[in-house]
Structure formats: C-alpha cells, structure tokens
Image (cartoon, rainbow over all chains, first blue to last red; front, side, top):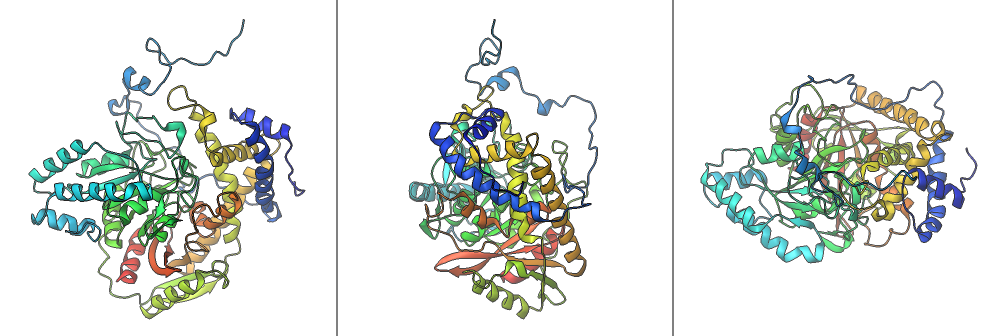
Length: 102
Length: 455
C-alpha cells in the first residue's frame, strides 16, 4: 500500500461502476492521472503509527438518540409533494429505469 | 441609511425606532443585487420581488419585536428552502424545488427574517475557492478577478456587497471561515452539533457544521442565539441548553487569557505569516499570553480529511439518482465525480482498512491532541489559510493545490470544535483573517475574545 498508486483504466471503470457514475472517455483519461495523484497523497497517512488507536466515527459522544414512535405530521409529504420533483412521475408513481429483463 | 454599513443590530434599532422600514432594507438589497450580481455572480436564485416587498410591508405593520423582524437574509444554496429553487451549486439539481424548509430556515422565518434568495457556492460544498460551482465562480468583493473563497463564496460576498445583512453557510473543512476571511468579514463555524443539519444537503455527515457570515462579532453571537439548539430531526445535535451568546460581550481586555499557537501553522515563508504576526502582537497588547506549542498531528489532518470526506460524500451523493429529483448522475461536475470516485475506492473491499479505518484512527489522534492542548490553554490561534485569495483560474487544473488551502481549517472540523474567524487586515490588497479555535461548546468564550479584538 505504500507503493505508488497507479490506477488502470479498468480500476477507474470498476469504481465508476460501483458508484453508478457515468464517465466520458475524456474524464476517464483525466481521472487516471488525477485520482492516482490524490491516492498517492492520501497514502502518506500509512506512515503514521496508529497501533492501538481506536477509530473516531463521530465526535458528539451521543449514543442511541431515539424518539417516540408517533406520526409527526410536520415531517410528512403528501403524494403530490413527494412526486413534485420527479421528471418521470406517472399515475402517482415514480418511473424507474428497467432493471429486469425477460 | 447605507445597507453596506448596517449590522443586524443597528438595522433592528432603525426599524424599531422607525428611522427606516423593512421595505427600505429590501429595496436596498435588491438595488445592490441589480448593480453587482452580473459581475460578481453571487445569487443563483432571488426570491420573487413582489413576495419580498409583501413580506417587508407585513413586517413593517408590526412593532418589529421579533428577533430578526424584517431583516434580509441570504441562504447558501445547500439549505432547503420550501418552494424556492435549491441547487447545491450543481447542475444535477438545477431544477430542484424543495417541498420543505431546513430547520434553520424555519427558525429564521419564525424569527421574522426575510429570505432574499439563494447564493452561489462550490457544488455540494466541494471547494475552498468558489471555482467549483457549476454556475461559475463568485468574484471576491474586493477584486472580482480574485476568488471569494469557498465553499460559501456567495454567502460572504452577498454580505460584503450589501445584498443582505447576514448569510448562512456550512463549514466541513473551512467553507465558512475561508470566504469570511477573504472578504473581511466575521465567520462562525460552531461546534459540530450546535446547529441542526436537518434540511441542509449533506456533504460529510460527521463533519458538516452549520454557521453564518456577518459584519461583526455581535451580529454573529446574536444570530447563533437564534439558530442554535437541539433538534429532534437531527440526532447529532447537542442536548445541553443554549447559553445567551450575547452575555459576555462586555469584556474589556484579554488579561489572563492563555492562547496556544501551533508552530506547525506558522511557516515563516507563508505570505500571510507577517499579517499573522501582527495579529499576535495586537492580541498580546490586549493582555493575552501567547505560547507556541507543537501539534505534530495537525497537518496530517489534510490526508485524513481527504479520505474521510470523499468516503462520506460518496455515500451522501448516492441519493442523487435523477429519478426522485434532479438530473442524471452524469451531470455531476468534475470535482464531485473525483470525490465520489476516491470515496468509493477508499470504502471498497480490500482498501477499507488501509484508507478509511486508518483515517478514522488518525482522526482520534488529532482530536486527542486538541484535548491535550485545551487542558493548558483557553484557545488556539491560527491563520485561516496559508495564502491570500488567488486569481480566479490559477489553481483550477490542480485539485491538490486547492486542497492545500484548507490546511489550517480542516483539523478543526475533524475534532468537531468551534472556530471564529476575525478580519485581520489585508495582504496584497486582499483581506485575510485569523481564526480562534476553542473546545467544544465554547462559542461564548470565542465571541467575548473576538469582540475585544474587533474593537
């Protein structure tokens, strides 16, 4: 992991696939260089001795913040509101890309 | 009445004594928007003029007793504003109209504030110069060919150019502090959890802090009194009661105050270091004791941040599916795509331990180092950025160069601490500031010290 992080086209395409991120050919070429440089930069962290150190996920110190299981009308959307920004709304439904093929 | 020199407090005084009206304030803001917006590219969406005047007239019918009655406020475009377009500075949301208000927006409206509009920013908060906005950069209020700082670039310039009296912002790695310092204004990044994040489009959920930019310290304290507090809609908000932040502003000097300056933040070759020395001298003359300390993990914050933040960003931006709202994911700008890619990579199988987990451990080291310093000192003083504002376009093709601007602001976010930025004069005719960092929940102290320094 302390070696130079040179990404390949396949690496970039794989990560873009995981992230559902459409990339143009020009972006793929640009990102191979830029992302490799960024990875090199952040890999410097591996030089620090973190043996025995606990991870910090959050700094509030709060745990298990719960609320009563009641309906809060202030946080409800009507169906109309929920669909208000959907380009492909149809008959009161969200229209989604096809994910099943016969 | 010159809106450029009015503060929230003096405006309320004028309204309540009927020296001028809220309509006067709104008209002045709209005139300045008309005058400057094309050149400086500040507002992305201005509220309907008739609606604004109607709200102002309604406020003028009252005795202006509400805390922000009739006061024009600008919102960074990350804040969900009901029925008012909210873009996050990105083409992905260029047609998005929120169906609800963020908690902070609701609090401001309940306090009588008039939301003038939504201001420009680096898309999704990704940036420290304003150059990553999908709608073009915002020009610095003192020289439009230079960066305004980011990501709350529009927020700072809107206040500086008299387009509003206060603007909200968010600060995940310096995004309030940098633009405030670059436009000669006061910027507050509160303690993480002091102000609700509900309804503010998330960048990195464990670091995002909700704050504001004002012309002076008193306004900053006054505004925090309104926005701070526990919110049942945001489980990370603090549970202890909110103090009155205006209480200790009558402090006369800084006698007895112990301030630490990390030597890692004072490279003598930095262009701002001379200005910073001047600020230190001023503070010493006011009676404070300044001691140089070593914080060996301080600068490691940069790498830590650029692992943790892209990781959390890749998760938060996964919801932009182009189905329920917004446009397709291909419309993300280059910086957003870079961060999503880095984050996805750092969290993926085989790399999670080496990157994300390691970064979380270094985060602990940074938090603990601050805690240790605060055992012996009341506050930490640092420059805001290593350099003054750069020329627009200068750093845009080198993402790493832009990341370097956040060197001194980032560690504060990793530790969840509050930081107050105060104007500190000019370098090469452009404003720079200094930042005063305190332990969690110490905004009262920061305001009282900042107020003395300001006077």
